[in-house]
Amino acid sequence: MIIKKVLNNNVVISENDRLEEIVVMGKGLAFQKKTGDRIESEKIDKVFVSGSKEGVREIEKMVMAVDPVVLDIAKETILYAEKTTNHEYSDQAYITLTDHLNYAVERGRKGIYIPNPLLFEIKKFYPDETKVALQAIDVINKKLDINFPSDEAGFIAIHLANSRINANELPITMESTEMVRDILNIISRFFGIMFDDTSLSYNRMVTHIQYFVKRILRDETIEENDEFLYELVQSKYPEAFNCSQRIKDYLCQSKKVKVREPEMIYLVIHINRVVEDTKR
Image 1: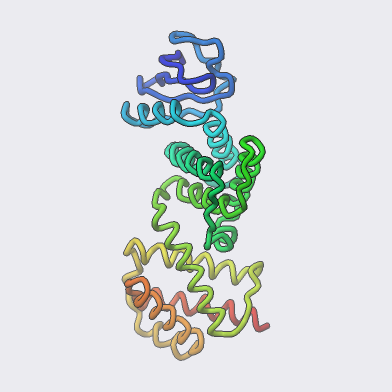
Image 2: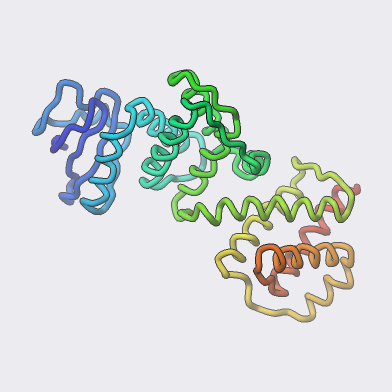
């Protein structure tokens, strides 16, 4: 690859084999380099293919406007996430994370720290991203002499979770996290028990509720009705069924969403299983 434009010592614009403009990053990649020089492949950390010249210009403007230290932390955070989690992250993740970190650092330098009311749930539902985010916060605090609390790591973790391939839905990610928390609280209060969050049945239920909530928010809920099975779970698991009705009322009244019978069936089954395991 040949350098078309040097943005800073670590970022250049080049072209790939399809003659698409790309942004190439790597520590010292462009040190003492100029337009027309060849890029040393062993120094490449990350290549961004935006698919359009406008996308490349967007990254270029960001690189020119943001503190190079913040740019490097964002890049290293994405690389660490790709290395340590089982998820792939979109190229857009670098842009959104850099933008978030840039404004967060500006706030932090003014001593403005935003509490994160969903931090506990984010840690629980997105442990891989939280681990990456906590390291990013540690690096920011040390390199930029800021004192971010762990609340900020929660915001970074949500950005990473939203930036997984095919998961570009930050409003849904945030709202679904809140809804999952509320549903788990409803179940816990209804039965008057504290769940073992390390148990297999609990984690299965949480996973089901996460997908259940996202389907509702996307209006992609299960359509097939099974009256017999619906009546069966109602009679066989009456407490779990009544609990699921409270969840249904909460979603209808607070979130203005409807829950169809097929979704209720699976919700009742998962609630009953985790409650029975907890009682045992």
